[in-house]
Image (cartoon, rainbow, N blue to C red; front, side, top):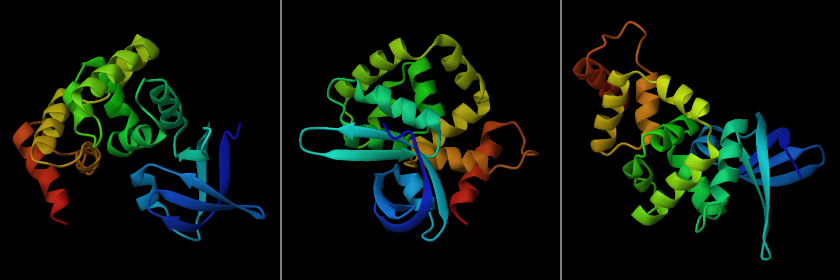
Length: 192
């Protein structure tokens, strides 16, 4: 199994990257945010997962080992294949996915294109069995309640969870702790 690749990005076609590793060019499918952030000609390190199916062998890459491990767990859910698992990790960060599991938030998963209510429930049930309580509580504790409310407001306005989290991370450390001010500052991020 190929656990990690490090090389230079030579081409990008949507979510499929071509990584030059020594004399070999390797196709790697990555989450959308990773593909969008990658720059051709720059070095890139990915934690990988090889999927072998009767019709295809494909390599999936992630910037964090945690995302790769969640991808592997998602593949264990009945009805979730590599493309849907990749779509989930394109729309949700590992922390968001863990929070959704901890709070049994089906609606967070339903925002992912291709995930219906039934599949979202299966995913939550499957992940609850796989994630330890300590990991889940640690991830939930990492986001203050005020930021959870801002995140929910941004997603209700139509922003993806990843976009909302990026806006939250852009807030200055000196930002006040009230929801309205933090929401206004987060919305300013999108007008840049």
